[in-house]
Amino acid sequence: MADLAQPRFVDRGALTVAGFFRDYKPDGLGQIPLQWNAMQQQLQLISGRVGGDAFGVWYGVLNGGGTFHYLSGVAVGEYAPVHPQFSRATIAAQHYAVFEHRGGPQEIRKTTDAILSQWLPKSGRTLVRGDDNSPDFFERYSEEFNRTGSGSIEIWAPIQK
Image (tube, rainbow, N blue to C red; front, side, top):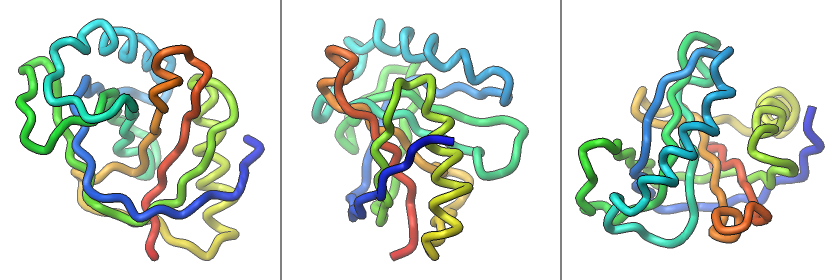
């Protein structure tokens, strides 16, 4: 399990992310870096980008196996046009527990497992489960991480206030 620091709590407004959306079986998660590489090569096609952060948005993780859905992308304006090869996801305004991820992107699963199996049961908090269009959680990669690989990675888990 990951060494998990205490989270900070944040109320965040709605977030619109545009990028590549792919489905994965549990044994195929090692392909996610290829998805990020493909997206990085196509960034010039994303107009209306807001800020320098990148986001990895997870769906279906809490459903217990099967297929996971993952969107690798960047924040865009709510009405920004999106090239047909990209998907758009709008994440509703919510209250979040925000965890610093210590390690590289390939170790994110250790952090998310620790959040779900260690922190959440002990915290007395409840994850917010929206509809099927709501993500289970998302990763935020700082602008510095995107440029040099040495910036921060955070896991944002939606929780009840």
